[in-house]
Length: 68
Image 1 (cartoon, rainbow, N blue to C red):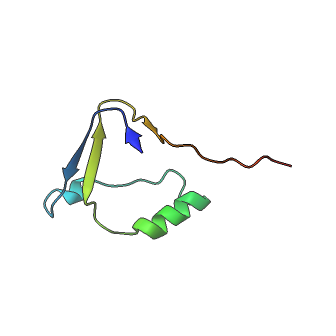
Image 2 (cartoon, rainbow, N blue to C red; image 1 turned 120 degrees about the vertical axis):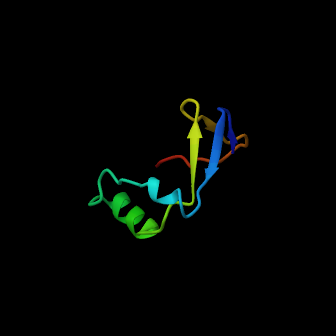
Image 3 (cartoon, helix red, strand yellow; image 1 turned 90 degrees about the horizontal axis):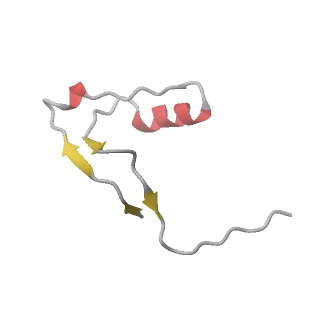
């Protein structure tokens, strides 16, 4: 995957990780439940920042089956 907008990764240590949190908008929904199970109470390890909305593209062909 190619990302076309400027981005930067900021690694976090034990002193800075508590300043970051993840809020799940719909924790009762299917995706929210899975995200909660996946992340749990793990501390943040890093943060990605973007100058603008990220845009990415897969530069290869792929097959989409026709619906019957």
